[in-house]
Length: 365
Image (cartoon, rainbow, N blue to C red; front, side, top):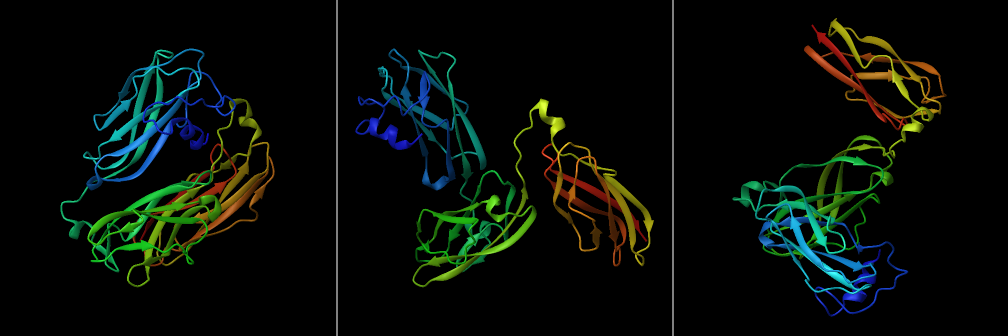
C-alpha cells in the first residue's frame, strides 16, 4: 500500500486526521496498517534517537481508539493519539528508538491494543545499532584515502536469490573536508547499489555506507569475493575500493507436505569420505554415487571444491528421475601434512536440500 494514500489523510495533523480514506484503496477489516515492519537501517549513537511512524486506518464500522502500546524494550518508547477515530479515519503510532545500548542488529516488537481488538496488533522495528567507539583512531584502523573502516574485507553474510540484502558499513571521515558519493557510479556492477548516509559526510565525523547486493542479478551461487570501486567527490574526485565477500544460496519456497514426493531429490552415496593414511607424494582418487530419487528432473546448478588441490569429473549436470551417475574426485596432497579436511559442495534445484556438502578426510604423512 502506498504511503501517499495515508499521507493524504494525515496532512496537517500529527496523530490523527479528519480526511476520509478511499475504501477501495485499503482492503481488510479492523485497523489496517500501512506497514507492520519498518527498518531504520544503521542507527549511529551520536545522532540520538531514531523515529519510525506507523500509520493505520480504522476499517471498522464503529469508532476506534488505542487503549495501550506495549514495547519489549526500554529502548523503544511509543507516542500515540488517544483520540477516538471514526470509521475511515487515519491514526499514527510514533516509535522512538534510543541507540544508547548494546550494538548490533536489533528487532523490537510493539503490541498495539485497541477497543476493537483487545488481543492487539503486532508491529516490528528493525535496524542495526552502531555505538560510538571509545577511540575512533584505533577502531577505524583500515585507512583508504583518509577514510577509516573497521575491516579490510566486509562480509555480507548469507545471501538468497529471492531478495536483495543491505549491509551497513560504518566508517570515519578523518579528512578535514566533506565527502559524498558521485551520482554516477560507472564502475559499480548492476547487482550492487551504494548509498552514503548522510549523503554529505562532514570532515572528522562518522557515517555509513549502505551496500545493497542483489544475488538474483549476480546469478552466481556459492562463495563470492570481489572488490568494487566507489567514486567519491570532495575537492577532487577519487576512487574508494571496497572488498566484499558473501555466500549465495538459491531461494526455494517451502514445499507443502503433499508435494514432497513431486520434486527432484539429490541422494549422495557418501557424505563423509575417509581416505585414511595417505602420502603427500601421491594423488588419491575416489568415486561417489549421485542419484535423483525424486520424480522430477534434477539439475546440478554448481559443484565447487574448497581447494585447488581437489578436482573432480562429472559426466552430466542433469539427472532424470531415478537416474544415477558416478562423480570422480582427485585429491593432490602435495605440500600438506597431518589431518586434512576438504569439501565438495553441490548446489541443485532440490528444494528440500538445495545445498549439500561432502567432507573428504585424510591423514597425510
